[in-house]
Length: 343
Ligand code: OGA
Ligand code: NI
Image (cartoon, rainbow, N blue to C red; front, side, top):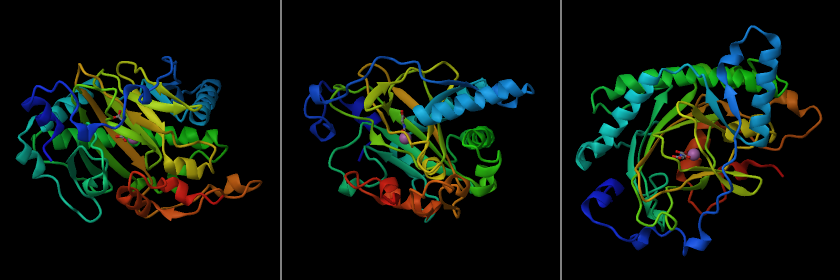
């Protein structure tokens, strides 16, 4: 189908085309809690030479993972100019003519590049309702793939992926410790030298009836930690204690959420957070997402040191099989993570 961007530009839409109606009426739709102060982690404290400071931030990280599955990272050290260059490059990508964008969509058997509109995961055929979103998604590690247009994009994404891999690894050291594991447990067990990293750019144009449609329906992410940047326009919601909470960012901070394989490693202590992307009728929203996961061949299991007094709550699966299973599942199917639960 044509992109949502083209649809919005070509017609003066006053109401939502019916194939995008995710909710029957506004009442059924999004109920957001009050804006809640979500945990903020000062990344620079993780490399503090003061042991008390470091112990405190590890405790905070553990709490954020356990109680929220979500936190904002400040002082992460990723240069502002790299982030703005990344937004510009992705914006230029979405601005290209349809056929230029689509030439990058390919069916690489392991590492596809996806340029899609209106669909969750390239699965148009079994999806009834379309999503109000265009996206570009590709693997950046252990194999690097990136569209070659706009021409500056590849270098910028490469640098961003290198920096975010480093950030993920350092956060995961703190998270390992917060679980009572050796600092390098996760990076060794998940073979992070060849970690799987997926980059995605999501584009959500203004929607004529935002309360009836959705950008991305509720889901959890595959991997260990997902990083998200947005262009200053809100729209990310997480589920917390049974309620949907609308999140307010901090300029320059990175949104981080815990993902499925971290739930498995922690044997359920750190839940993969359910989240979704909602829309508005005024501004285009952009989000740039990096899913940081184990190496493709790693068999992910609950960490054995956590199983001394508790039985394992999840079965095991190779990470890449998990990603492929999730990509091919239907929206109305039992989530992939649920399928791995043992009881
Ligand atoms: C995702 C995602 C949310 C957003 O890409 O997996 O959850 O706000 N995105 O774009
Ligand atoms: Ni997500």
